[in-house]
Image 1 (tube, rainbow, N blue to C red):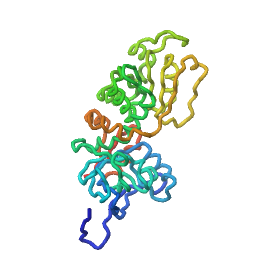
Image 2 (image 1 turned 30 degrees about the vertical axis):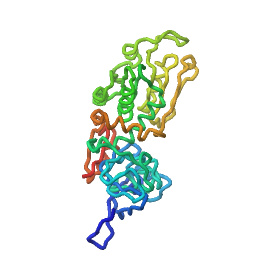
Image 3 (image 1 turned 135 degrees about the vertical axis):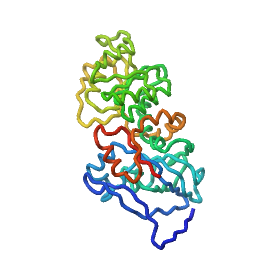
Image 4 (image 1 turned 90 degrees about the vertical axis):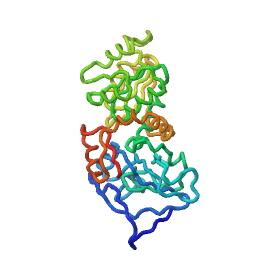
Length: 350
């Protein structure tokens, strides 16, 4: 657990931080010291999330003042283990629960960020702070664990189950992760809706049964073809026999489409972030008895999703559009924040 330094100067590491509104920079900090209950990781990959661009735009993340570390989707290898830690060994490959860190949420207002060379997990407990994964899972895929937990929570909130028919709006990482999760739990038919052809191609690659380009096709009419017509009820007109709607797009037209399409007893779950208020005619929806649920984060799913990620990593690998070397991390943040430039950017450490 101890190392010998050839210099009298303290060893340092680099980390990426927000330094002001719209600006990020690389700084150097003293490498953390490992206590008896701690685990130290060399970060091997860290995904870039849309929230990183939001944090950058506003100049940081309350309640922290000054430089705010970025990156909340890390995966890494254990390089030091405190004497009191159980079940974790040097050399283990691990994914991280950023919400569990005792010094604040990693990369989301906490004292540390995943876009650092090293992370110190204080009071580390296996399956609470870290989960060990097989060495053959690529680091870029391992870094998807946190966003896939977000997707899994959305699917859990939707109640989607084997034998049902579902539609996912938005073929970004969360929508695609939700589609994978639905198929792995036995949902009979999953349709993915988007307006970008390349995203729809990826949806088919990860196992969606069909896709709809909503810029070119009427979604309700196409769902009627794909899922059939729901049994007659109080609801007027023909409605698709779709059981579950999941909004991972956060776009107002999605809500309008769900209201237009939902059969009696359908479920709609919103995980996409709507940045503006959305009009919803509850009177018109009354006869559908639509169940509307909202989904945020991953209260229990951070390591629930890991088994799927490990067992089907080749499928999840389709979600990673760009792997950027750690030396170009500032460029990776810029690329991820540019609309239409990339789908899922992962920074990989050599």
